[in-house]
Length: 78
Image (tube, rainbow, N blue to C red):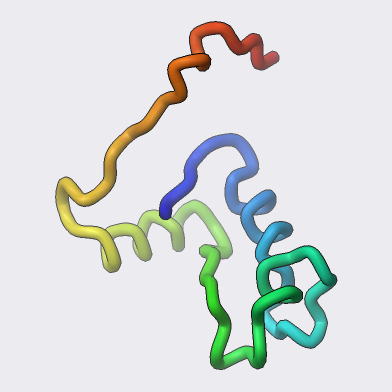
């Protein structure tokens, strides 16, 4: 899954928790499901530039699709 948008990296990394699952808070993905740093169950890029490079590395041309919820037209997001 690839996310983009305002603060996507910071928000995603907060949901993941620190790389070391032992230091990750309960409720984060690594805190709940991680075992050790080399065996993480998830990866998150550390910057938009890294995210672009990693997306190109792992996903081929045409493998990503844009998706908008049908309710998006009714959402006011200031």
